[in-house]
Structure formats: C-alpha cells, structure tokens
Length: 272
Image 1 (cartoon, rainbow, N blue to C red):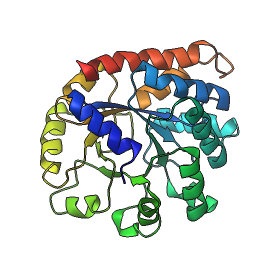
Image 2: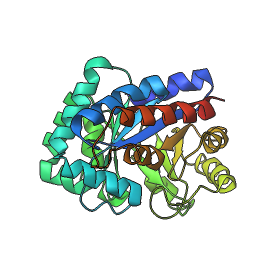
Image 3: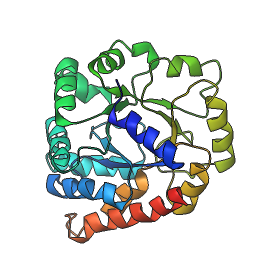
Image 4: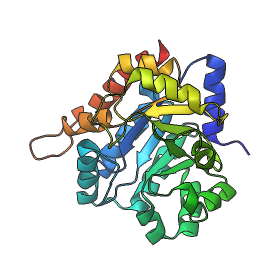
C-alpha cells in the first residue's frame, strides 16, 4: 500500500529534484500560530512536513529545538493537541505528507494502539521516533507499519556497512541521514562526507535518503540536493520563530511570515 510519502517521492523523482522536508515543533509558540505556520509551508516550498511532538527531555535536540519544545509545552501543547493540529491542517491540504517526529515516552503513555488509530485518523503518514532502535521494533515500528504508517529510521555517519542492514530492515517511506554527530542545529554538515555516506548507504536500501541536522542555507541545500533525495531543515526554522516573537515571547503577524520566507529561500536552493 503506497502512502502519501511514497507518492510524493515518486512524483519528485519524475520531476528530477530532491524534496524539501521542513521541521517545526507542534504548538510553538502557541496552537493557532503553529497551525498558521504549518498551513503556509507547502505554498512556501515544503514538500513534506515533519511535525515535532514536544517532550520534556529531548536528548537528540540542540538548544533551538529544546527551547521550542519548552515554549510549546508552556503554551499547553499535548500529544492530543498535536494530533488536533494535524487534523486541522488536513481540512485544507489532503496531499502534503506529515511525519510525526519525537520520542517514545509520550506515545507509550498515550497507548501505542490508541495513538496509531488516532494519528492515522488525524491524517499523519509517518513516524520518526529517535530513541527506539531496531532492536525494539516490536514496540512501535512493526505495529505502525501493519497499520499502514511509514516508520522512518535515522542513519548517522557511524552507521557502517555491518549495521546498515539492521537499521534499514523495517524502515519505510525514506531514510533520514543525520549529517553530523551530536545534537540538532549545532554544527554545519561536512558536505564531502555527506556525499560519500549517502552514496555508501544506497548500497543497503532502495528507499529515498533525506539529509538533515545543521542545514541552514539555500547553498547548503543546493549542494546536498545533488546527491540526496531530500533535504531536511529544522533548527533554522525554529530559530526564525524564536527571533520573531515580541518581547513577552508571544507571536506577532511577523512570526509565520518569517518562517515561510526562509522556507521559500531554501526551496530555491533545493530546486536549483
């Protein structure tokens, strides 16, 4: 059964270009502004939306995304409200794929079976759960795939040829290649190393490979898009939200616009 993610990558392959995958935290800085940001992403040039599920202990995230998660939680965001945002987005957009990204704890507390039913009903297409390794596939990965949802796995510069088959065994939708070691948004990717590792990982999977962590400019996106099937931008967008709040930390009319302007700029790089 093909998902929106499968169809989107297939369509972009025909177009002969990489996908722009944008990441924002659900509910940052508040529910209504988050929905406006999300609604404007496809028009600005996003092909796939990764929606972060805020969590109190985001161990893979750098300062920008951690701060966004705290803003979101302080504004009252919950996993239930995150699914509500997805549902509200789907009213006006039936095609853009949505990937929910985060940690296992909130899903476990919600209840795996209930979460999968509710996430699919809301209109989510895939999951990235950064703290569930392949050895724990029975927990969420296999039930998600059985329910018709893509389970997207992270590969890193340390995913060697021995480990890669295990990592990719139950992966679907696409592979998310983490271009730097460490947390999100703190280092720039080494573009030569990205090219070498993306081409090496292709020996182990026929899935599209999207590259993220540290991508901030249209030029970086342009270079990565030559070798990868997708470019993921997250911390730069989350920082754009933070830098366009008023002195009380609240959203203004400028907040969604700042994010959409940056997405449009990076989209030009991906498409050039």
